[in-house]
Image (cartoon, rainbow, N blue to C red; front, side, top):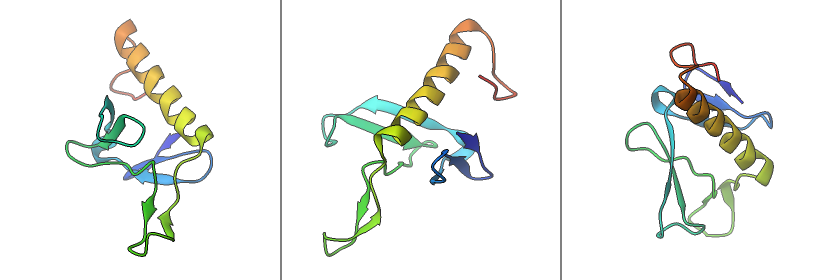
Length: 93
């Protein structure tokens, strides 16, 4: 996973917008699988896909398990670096 000008690029090539690089994760019973993944301070990353108005065609397909795992591993590494007092401004973790 690597930073881009406007967010991140996963090893699959999928890119997603993340204002100022912020990606958040929180439990949310209103979501299909119980998690809300956000970007920036109010945005949202559509990891569960975006369907066209016809409800039959994916505009953006759901993320794969590998893509979800990559994001999770990245965020775990960041939080672990924060906990350990390392990483930080240079974005390394």
